[in-house]
Length: 81
Image (cartoon, rainbow, N blue to C red):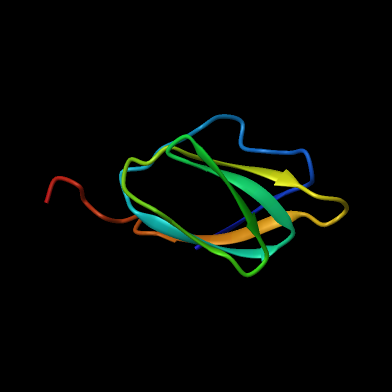
């Protein structure tokens, strides 16, 4: 598990993708999240599911409170099995 946090106006440096499916729970603030080139507004208490190989990136919006989320993915999966 990892926690990412973006101040309002901050974002991932690029749109990324992962071989694993994974999810994120929004801990604080609000943002917009790119899911396969669809920008979706998200806020504290929301859950995001990201399928394998889906394009994704987060962008913090709002005032004052950081856009923070905890995410989980199967980092140890051997994709060749």
